[in-house]
Length: 137
Image (cartoon, rainbow, N blue to C red; front, side):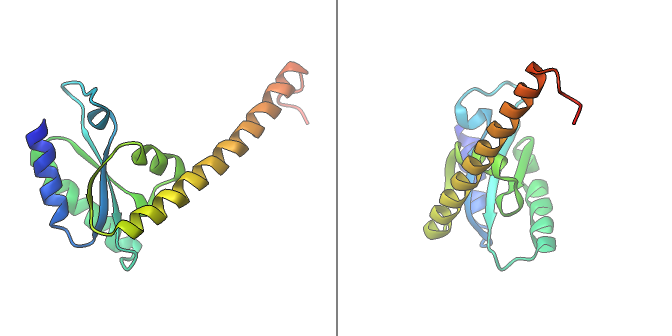
């Protein structure tokens, strides 16, 4: 597994559009099963358009496929909770430390905001259930 991770890192470092990349999921946590994929999150240059990011993600998935099942997530386009989950993994490469720190701070803030509002919503739903008002105005 260490050899595959090193090769994955080497290949990601060779892509100039990648500002940083993380390994997350079961492989990063050290709990993979035999059929576990490689969950890789990349943050790409903001100069790339959405279409260019899509094409680069597809290219990376194809080029990394010989290493096993690799699932590539583009952090620029990821929802806050997925981005936060990826940040709980470990860095594979950082070409732009400032971009990483900015993304980290923005993502943690956004996911905390989302969690706060989800808790308010869940609390209101529980209250409606307890009062027998769920599904009614």
